[in-house]
Amino acid sequence: MVGSSAEADGIAQAGARAGRYRWVIVSLLFAATAVNYIDRQMIGVLKPTLVAEFGWTESDFATIVFWFQMAYAVGYIGFGRIVDALGARLGYTIAIIIWTISHMAHGFALGVGSFAAARFGLGVGESGNFPAGIRAVTDWFPQRERAFAIGLFNAGANVGAIITPLLVPALVLWFGWRAAFFITGVFGAAWLVAWWLVYRHPAEHPRVSKAELAWIQQDPADPVAKIGWGKLVVVRETWAYALGKFLIDPIWWFFLFWLPGYLFERYHLDLKSFGLPLAAIYLISDLGSIAGGWMSSRLIKAGRSVNFARKATMLLCALLVLPIWFAQSIDSVWGAVLVIGLATAAHQAFSANLYTVPSDMFPRGAVGSVVGIGGTVGAFGGMGMALFTGYILDATHSYEVLFAICASAYLLALAAVHLLSPRLAPVRV
Image (cartoon, rainbow, N blue to C red; front, side, top):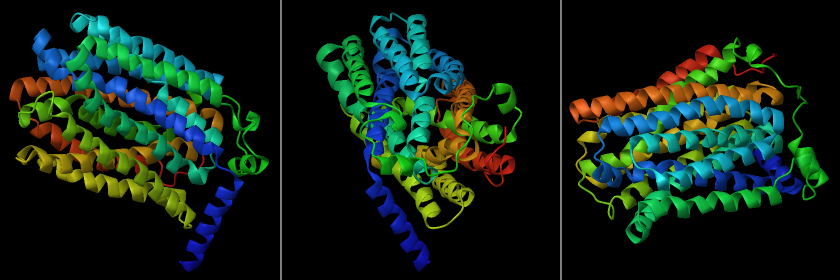
């Protein structure tokens, strides 16, 4: 064990000596993901305001969420192919232009139909964030660092989710909810300018030293030819990732879109007071995202196999979600924050490792497509969860069944991953 620790320290020092510009790229991905989640979560934060103004039922709100996820499902698999064909730089550009325009279009919405249309456009654009981000990480990082890098940029989701309930209520109180969509739309435009100024492939980037490029390219070369969906959909490892996404993505959608309303109703909070508890939940989530990527990367550096590192981390995360089953029985708002925050942190840690699985198993030219397939399957699960949530809440006005589903999903997801890919071995396609 001493030897493994010394070896891990030596590897870390070698990575630092090689250069650090790849971490600048992670910071850009982090910022894009934060903007992505500000735009995505605003409908949840504004739910009480919009319900009061338009008289929506839970099923009306679920319909709006459903159309976002429908677009996300279609767009995710499409952007997987776009990113594989055009690369991360152009793929990300197309995505953020679509989602920023659609986000600002919410400011003109007049009811369920127009909100659903704006959410559909947002879903198409936002579906490009993770295929492009994971492709950028695959291009810029060796395998040993990818889970940590993905965990870092995935943490931007939680930063966006923290900022939204703190910023948006203030914008609504000062300027109104329509103006809030226009003001926050500026963030996406600013990020796009930075992306075009900074991002290049590492082999073409003037700020990347020869030593850092050698570090990035240390893994054995894999085929870079584009691989068709026909070959990927018949490989069980594709479905190991996709079924994992099908089981856990709906839970995150549920957290994102219904937690604001849950806190608002269960603890009798208002627009001024529910932001801090919600922000605290996502602050805890942020720690989980980073810790999950760090844990599996650390295990790999200590000499454990990729298979063991990913699955051991995901097992711990699945166990940490279990207490959310009893969340509705907690009378203290801050007690609920701790239990729900633990579950959302475990989700993010689990997700950071699951997102890394395609780059562990598939050649570089297939990563975006596999991520796209998984994202699409996950979005289909989210569509079903949205409609089910609306039905359950209108029928029972209780979250008990929903929290039970949240508690069990991650153990089922890990079982699916392990049964379909027992060793997370490289796939020949």
